[in-house]
Every structure is written in C-alpha cells, then in structure tokens.
Image (cartoon, rainbow, N blue to C red; front, side, top):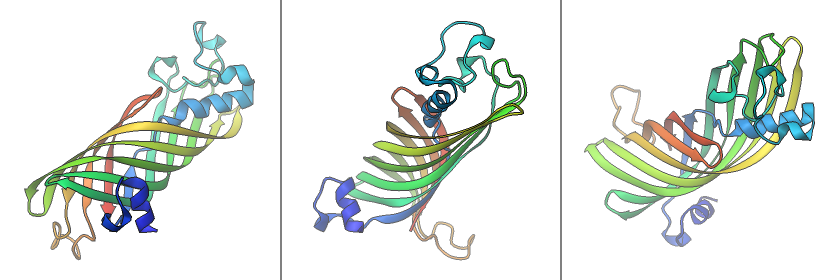
Length: 240
C-alpha cells in the first residue's frame, strides 16, 4: 500500500521510492467550497436560475436569499465566521533531488467545518441566521520543498505544491423562518505555498515525555483555487 502511494505521488520506480509516512494535520477548512455549496443549496430552495451565479444589481432586498456570492465581502451581507477548522490523516513522502531540495507528494483525507453567523439575517428576512458547511474531503498533491537547517533539530521549510481537492459538503441554512439542508460535491485544483518551522525527532525531548515520533511542522499556507481566489491559514502537522 505504501509503495503504491509512492508510485502515485512521485514520478519514480517503486523500488527507489522512500517509505511513505503517516501524517496528522490540523488546518483551516477550505473556503473554496462555499460558493458552489451555496449555489447548489440555492438551486434546491429557489430553482435552477438561483444557483447560476452572483446576483447583479438591485437592492439587497430584491436579491435571492441564498446565492453563490452571499458570504463574500462585496455581497452586502453582514456575517461573522465563528468556526473554521479541518483535521486530516494521510500519507506523505519525499524524494531528495539534491541537498536541501526534494520532490514531495501526499494523499490525505479529512473533515472540515465552517460556521457563519448572519446577525442581520438573509435579504428581507431580518431574523439572525446561521449557515454551516460540514465537509468530507480527499486531497492528492505533488510539489517541491526547500529546507534550510537552523539547528541540528530544527529547520525552515518552504514548499510549493499543486493538487486536487475533492469534497462532499453538507450545507445547513437555519433561522427562525428557514430550515434548509443540502448535499453537494465538487473537485477543485489548487496551488499551495507553505512556510513551516520543522522540529525533528528529539527537538522537544525533555520538554515532553519522549522524543517526537517524526517531524512536527508549524507554519502557514497560501492557497490559490482558480475561480475562488486565495485563502490563508495556519497549519500544524505531525509525521510518524
């Protein structure tokens, strides 16, 4: 199984592939799922034309209650993002190209949640509303990583990767007058730029009960999804 994942992620023979490692990660959920999930919910609630795209022109009260651009800064809708989290489990592998530079690949699956509160309601409905997105996702990606040692047990790591994010999302819109549920699926390509502080096994020995089982990475990610823009967030991952 591990060898098969190495073949899928890196362009090399299985006999030369380094062993893949188990990875646990905590990251923000992906906001790129929101416009399409809202569009699918609008089609279910208001008909096919409602989910076709952003509403143009008109007063806020004349626009559809639910539309793909509802939770964007320019939508005219007041909202707060109350919860934004994802947890993932997967396999990751690296193939050194030269000292400090490696090809990388990973396959992960996980779950994410976005929870939006709308204190002024939806359109002409002024009761406070809530919209949640619960997703199950799979990601496959390949890229390059550059590493510079800072100490024997710590390094700076920069990575650039391209991948696919496939998700199944449950959308729930609720207020005093609304109770709407919908499920949708989507697949998005993405580019990710990451910067991490990498702590190797033994880095925290003495501060913890024992040594780390594998590299612990704390960092940030910028992710570009065509058609959905750029998102940023912090990451925490541990390999075994």
